[in-house]
Length: 561
Image (cartoon, rainbow, N blue to C red; front, side, top):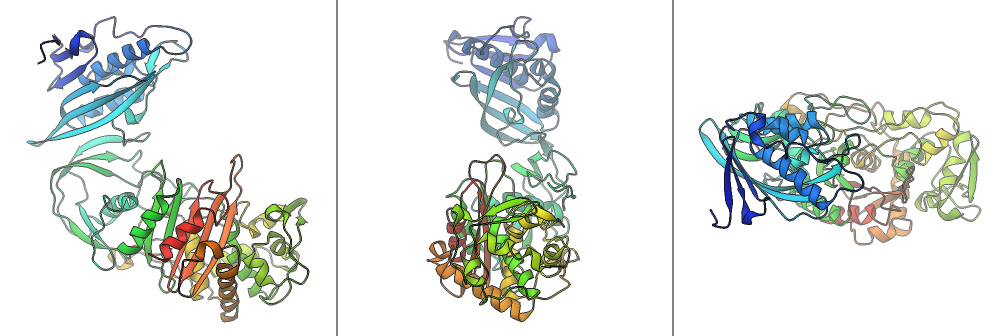
């Protein structure tokens, strides 16, 4: 030990105070050997009361009290230093009892205001195997609302930076063996190389690990917040993991298991392009599928919360929904690609006024194909009175495009929702607003259906792995409808709103742009979808602006890997 340090034994725990500063390294070795009162003296076990903003001195005091108790394994005292005693006590207790931490050295860093960083150098011991677990985290001290005391603002990430609310560290032998994920060409896909696949791999392991062979080892992992959960629309998830975290995540392998090999329909080349594309835009997601069979080629997200919005998101898709609306109108003979479709500045329906972007309008006599390519809202809403059948849009979405048919992709996914509405809500749905909810997987599938003329349920892995049923649409798109729809998407990609983004894409290509207004948001969500030959892709960027601004470049990059 450094000669400048002073040492003391507190309840069987060695507390080193570096340089006599009274604030340094806290070390837990084996059992704490004492009760609550042995861990910290009466002064440090009670936070001081105060008023106004927390001072740095108070932050240091609270951090020291909490970290000392945590390092000693004294969950009760540690909890008393936080503003959420019940959650903090459980997490600190689990750190030793359920994560099997046999030793931990916690070293605080230099405070920045009321935030105190620290390093944890731990050892995990399970059934005779010991391995190190080192990481950095931080805590913030706040004023207790009712007590006025300086307390650690409790977050799960205090225990480990990768923990989200409700999650816990666990160690032991998992129920599912490790899984080696490979693409359609047997190239290995690792979360280190393809970060977006981390939650995907976790879910595939939970669903198929025990079915694909292999032998479980021992590891430290992050346990999801709940054993069962529901998606944002209230339906059960496919694998029982939470909607946000995508399943259990391994942090440390203690004893290597024997992995099974699970083949997916992903394409490593397309996946790499997708990962690079979303990296340019925060809060972005993209999915690519093959129109000829529905196989998912890539899934990528760039989000702070780690949420797989690409497959489970529920956002209004904006004008990308006009692919379905156009198909419905063409299907019923209410419009034709080469026939006039008035595009005025504004139009009213159900007591609500709708307008085009920046109130643009097109000359009288403009055909429907051009209105589609220019993404004219009013040209679509004007057609509502021509459709006498109730629920026409919802029926088209389900019966032809397979939306809402309980897709079983291989992991959890949300398969879109087009509710039956009337009045102004119905008009809003025609242009992808209102109560419609989609994600990039849904829109990529819609584009794939338009491209091929037939719905193929998106698949990540073969249904033969577990005998799960796949969704089947009740109607095939009429060939005349498909021909007109594809021609309008081609026009959009070459001279319409998608031309700039799609300029670098070769092959037979088509596109549709979209932007969706979100209540309270300063900028609309950016949506874009397109196809090139036998690849269809769709992207969404929350708050990204117009479709061609952010989502467009992502799709173009995926279509030209």
